[in-house]
Image (cartoon, rainbow, N blue to C red):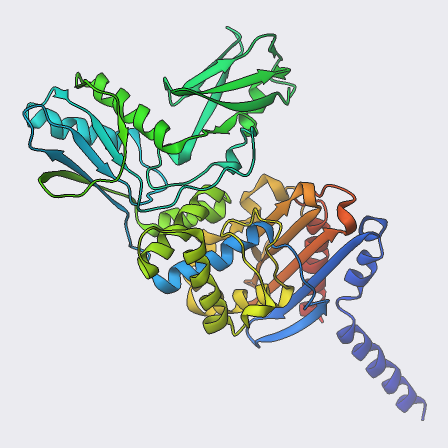
Amino acid sequence: MVLLRLFLIVLFSFSFIQGQPFEDIESRLQDRLYRDVDVAIIISDLSLSNSLYKVQPHLDFIPASLTKLFLTGTCLDYLSTSYRFKTKVYLDKEDIPSLYVKGEGDPNQTREQFILIAKALKKKNIGVLKSIILDASKIQMDANLYGNSARYYYALGGALNFNYNQIRLLVNEDQKQLTVSPESSFVDLDIRSLRYLSSKKRGFPKISLHQRPGFDKYIIRGAVSKQDEMYTNLNLRVSRPTHFYASMLKQVLLDHDIRVIEPLSFERFYNKKKKRLLTLTSLPLFNYLEDMNQDSSNMIASSILKVLGKLKYGEPGTQRKGLLLMDQFMYKRLDVQTEMFKFKDGSGLSSYNRITADHVSRFLTYFKKKYPESIKTMFVDIKQSSDYDDMEVPEYYDVYVKSGTLSNLGVNNLAGYVNDSRIGKSYSFVILTKYRDNKEPAYKGTLSNPLLQQILASIQKMSLN
């Protein structure tokens, strides 16, 4: 009888341990940190296609940059990863020819590509152009929803884009100067009363962007240091991508002794009576998708979304057309009805986007099955990112994540995979959080990282049992 009682006690204790690997997550959610926070969590065992733990899986949340995951899935579903943007450049047949460029939405044309245009002109012994005509009609330009903000993550996208429509300010501490990269006549800096700090401090300068005839003016006030440069505070957007593109192209041609007589023109043109000079071919689409997710580039996301819309539904490529494809992806591949989610953009900047933890979990399962080799490139390895330096990760765990944060709205999300090389198992997890009533800002990792740490500990506890 005593032996039977001992057996039952041991059996009960074992069942309790097996059934409670995630109780520490429940305890964590009782912390003061999450008192005024809505939270959704799903942890799944991908080898069993089974959810191990759920908290509010069907509650609506703002996805922020997790939206880019669904755009990535849509893109891979519709296009080959080897797809390349092709920007065609023409000359007319006049004695003094004009140069014609037809934009296709390539997110990042480069100085090196502009040099190819200059070399092609030189090869034809052309040193003078009547004008340059730029056709941006194939892709709709993004609307500026961010006023005078110069932040790089608000960069607009259109048919013709140079350097992701961004500039970077470089700090010379010794000479107390700011220089612009790439060097551009389109950029003017107003740095009156700007103070330069040592590299041990961050200045957090206030920078505003203002359109002027023929150039952008950046008004910079406060203090600045080398640390501001390192932390991307000095990565800035331009206000008019097509004009920025034109000014950089003209400058490269001048650097190669090719003069343009008349002002540049922005208008639609037809190929009749024109001869192809060359075609500028981009890197493969896969490279852009990798950058979009690893760097969370809103500009790339916006551009790709509109290009998808153009390829499927015709010119011009618009956000609305691209969103129709995303809706189809959600329905056909993830079996989510259109009334159950809402996408208003492809980047995640919109506060009107809505998804649930269940939707994200479905995507992670789908992506693991369809594109397992792409996880390492589309998601961030937390062991290689300083954002997760405080995270304790077992050496036999590989953790890949995609974050989504809208600080001003109190949104801080994280989703990804945990691979346990010791036992050969893979898990997915989704963490969606938002301060209620926008009471507080939620900076990257503020709410999600403590929960991820607890998830890793819980998965480890479960596997040991």
